[in-house]
Length: 267
Image 1 (cartoon, rainbow, N blue to C red):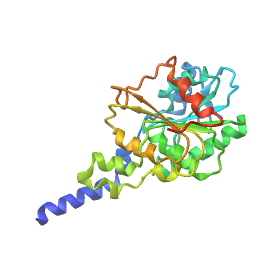
Image 2 (image 1 turned 45 degrees about the vertical axis):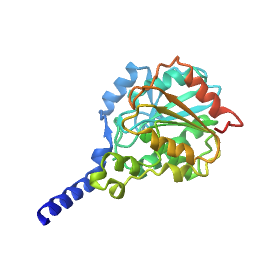
Image 3 (image 1 turned 180 degrees about the vertical axis):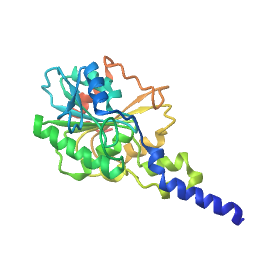
């Protein structure tokens, strides 16, 4: 029995120590390459090349309705999420694709604390540079960043949109890695239920019906826990990475109309 238990415990220790390598999958670039890629896509490193927090359009459309910060998922980088900018700028918003520490050309290492602290810094800078109203979008892992910003209470957020969110990262980890006791070993728990309990603005949630990464039961548990204004959009047959992101689809406008309303509509 000991010959089985000891290797298992050693494996748990290795997983515990290296779990962030299993959670975060950043695409990394040099600052020169990042600047060149952004230029090709008509983007600028914002607020400056030297210490950038995200990407913004070099030639933005008029942003009469406010600013949106998009916090992306755990893989790739902000520059891979151009479709958010394309879809939301044409709705009349300024869009900032936030970049995490350790992603793109940014220094640092990703963790729950690092991502949320950086998100608060980014939101404060957006409000300082552009004013409000401010909306936050969180994609998958980014839903945890948005929830952390909201719970902090320093940022006036008019509305939030969560794409394939979860109730807590610990529960999702346990679903995939129950045999490694993941729920109890997860360091970056991203408890969205707890962090969104006191937010009173409108919350839109967008789900992929066939999501294999974050099964719908974890997203719906979050939805059911929200005590205030909320609305759900579900896309049949879509999985985690195949949501319909064409910028001309009507759901973009529907979602923003809901979260921009003075009085949201409860389910």
